[in-house]
Picture 1 (cartoon, each protein chain N blue to C red):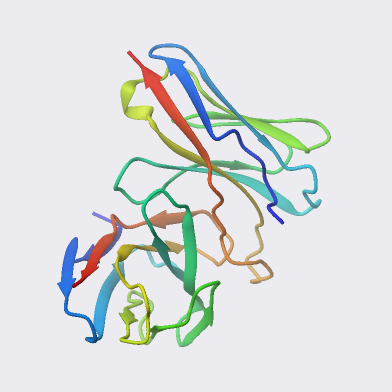
Picture 2 (cartoon, rainbow over the protein chains, first blue to last red):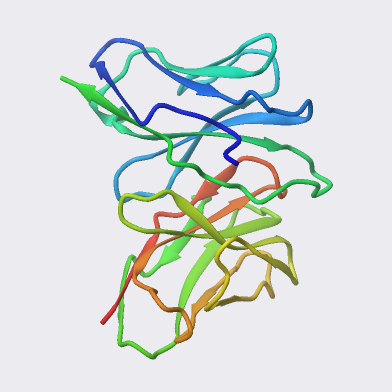
Length: 114
Length: 112
């Protein structure tokens, strides 16, 4: 069973904020939410991760609901180069090795329109 | 420049031949991974290694083999037993097993 559910595709106008939702209703207390993206024919790129607090870095913001059952990745000012498949992954973050392999689902194909 | 390097970018082989894909990282990461991606599909995990001299099968390990003799290197051999070897192969590494992973640019293997 998939741990996350994402829309198959989304459009966003260039210069606007792109908000990508992810449902993870069965997330465990020790699982983090990770976001990656893959631009066509390139390797995936790590974007951001979080546990329960909202997080922001130079690429994006991650908003996690209080019950942790869903999250939203926000690209504040989308550009054409942000067109990619975005993957939401939940995973234990444990330096002791107690985690499953990193598993990618189908993701959301975000298309930025000029 | 620190990073993860896959070579070559494109590789062609005849059916029945084994082929080894290179993956090197200078990030001092303990964990490394190999994925396969088919057109229009997501990534599927082939093998992963949490630490040098150790590796585990992923979801689709049949027809593949790996080694992890050095921390920096995690080569993948696609053997003749792999029924559909033509695919885009991606290598990744992370500082420890479940930390955020950083990917190489991939090797596109075509078997003719």
